[in-house]
Length: 69
Image (cartoon, rainbow, N blue to C red; front, side, top):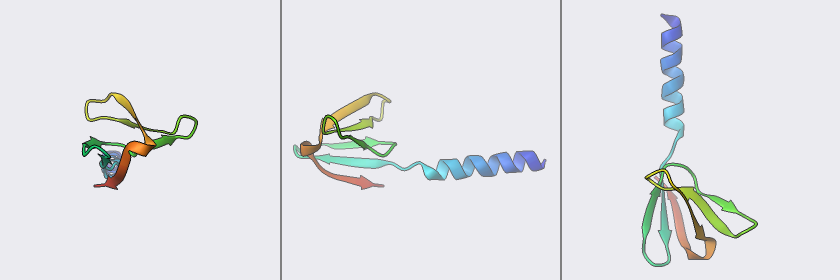
């Protein structure tokens, strides 16, 4: 019984750690991602996974704002 409660508590804690992010681009697009976008310093591109699970990249110069929801 205690193991089940501990497992449930751990799963709830992990679920609370994920955040949704909104990326606003220079051309007015609003892109939603479940994980924090990361900067690829070598290429100057912002790397993220879109809502459909595909990895995407956008030039940093095209990003207006990244907001944590």
